[in-house]
Every structure is written in structure tokens, then in C-alpha cells.
Length: 96
Image (cartoon, rainbow, N blue to C red; front, top):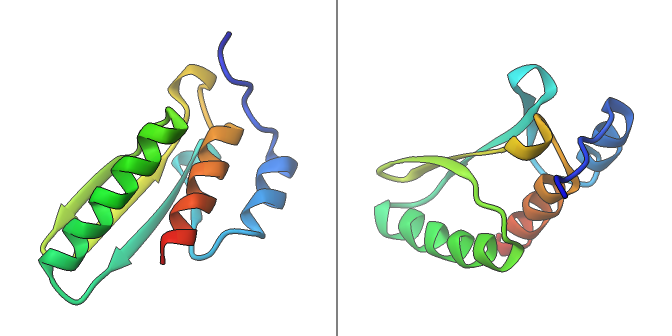
């Protein structure tokens, strides 16, 4: 069974509890940019996020250049945001 897409009000309520995330793709995704001291620190963060993503069974779209990591979360099966995205974003925030 595919995950259920969050309504705008539910998504906004979840966003209140997240740090630095913003809506992207007309509200069908959330995105956050992270900046670290150097490449090694950014890569270590990505490794920790990869382990979280596997544990959640939900994987981010991401991009890395030197000390920056850009993460976008969306649920393709739901055609937009789902609880999976919000829970993974919250878990990523807890890493920092």
C-alpha cells in the first residue's frame, strides 16, 4: 500500500517542529541545505543520514559539493509529502 500524501495543513504543522526545512516543488517536497567545516565533516554527515534513511526505508534526494549538503525529501509513491518525509527530516535534525 502506498503512503498517504499529507494535506497542506498537516504538512505545515509538521514543519513547525523541523529546523531549517522549507517547502519545495510547490509544496510536494521539503528541502534543507547544510554547511559543514569541510568535506570530511559533510561526508560523515551523509554517511549518518544514509544509515538513518535505510532504517526508515526512505531515501533522500541529495547533492554534495565540498562542505555543503542539500537534501530534498518527497515520497514518489504518494506524489508529494508523506509522514515518511517528515519523520526522516526530524531524525536528520536530531543528528546535528
